[in-house]
Length: 130
Image (cartoon, rainbow, N blue to C red):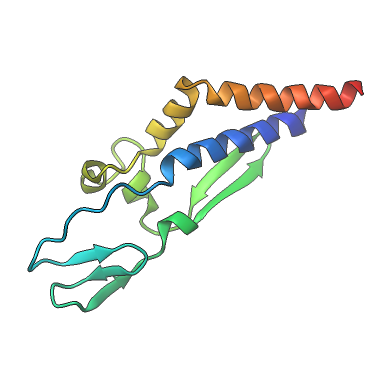
């Protein structure tokens, strides 16, 4: 049963990642101010690269843990972008980035988490019975 629960938890973590991963629409550049280009980094108003992008969308990982799974993003600024309520930078919230607690609630309320876990447990019992 433990492998089925862990497989279901990994599936749920992947569903949460699917909610978190999409980038919101980019905002228009304001002339005379620093600006960010996705996948490249932060640039000064004169065009000088100030900080390289860590490509947030490529830093996701799901790790199996005892009776569960851990979804993680290793970009140094991931908590500023996706952190739970009180941890997410207000700017990123206004940009449309989804918080981790919002993503989890969306997956649960949609019924997707229940469907994933039910399928994992049903698959395990099917393997045991056959």
